[in-house]
Image (tube, rainbow, N blue to C red; front, side, top):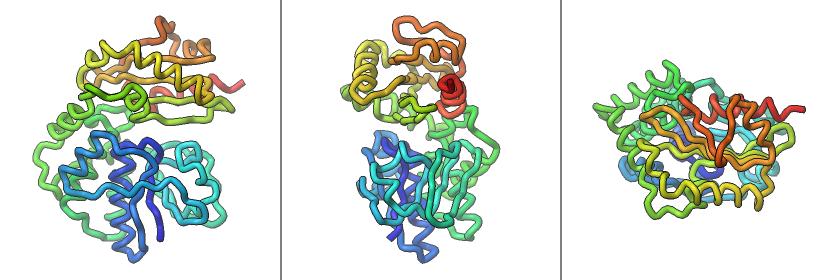
Length: 306
């Protein structure tokens, strides 16, 4: 059995990617199962429900088992025993993160805005038809990861793939569907603070420093006004309890196109130097920031190098 799995605290790209790849591999007579190592967020559940897809099974141990990685390629974001698993392949759109394997593996990595864009190309390569409901979910994953094509990570390959998937799924207004998804994500009423922070939270090793970066994307940043203080307290608690040097939480407004960045850090000078800003009351505004991958990590990480 080949398990197909995305990163911890999976987003829609990871969840849908696991479902799509497991379907593709099974069509190629490679027995596969979509799994996840974290809870499904509200947006991903909306997608699964809308297109009548089963959610991946929860699984957090892969020792001596075959695993195919989707939407990540480093040990920090995988199961705790990932180094003891047999990694058989990777489909991803992030920078390479130091995975080592005993044998040659299949690798589909491209600098695009979403892993599901690459998965669409894999279906085309193998000449496998994509079912209507799966195409709809893959279309949604691309809309989510590219912030409805606004993100600097978005490419013409993404927009082309999304259009083709929408046609297969019979989705006449993809952008409207994208707004519907982000409205779902914007409903944070009653959500526990810790769960909000960890909704889309990734861990990085930046030159020996443990760094956590979370992101919450909404259509109106004002939804955080009443809980921002609690988010800062919760972020600092995670930093102290889990041994982070720095934790950032992006509160991203996809309409205004920018992010309030909440900060908990032992390296304030590095954070301020990275964007030539001053952190005031444990936060700062980053105009135009929609992407953690292109507008946060590449600016922050080099400054941790001694």
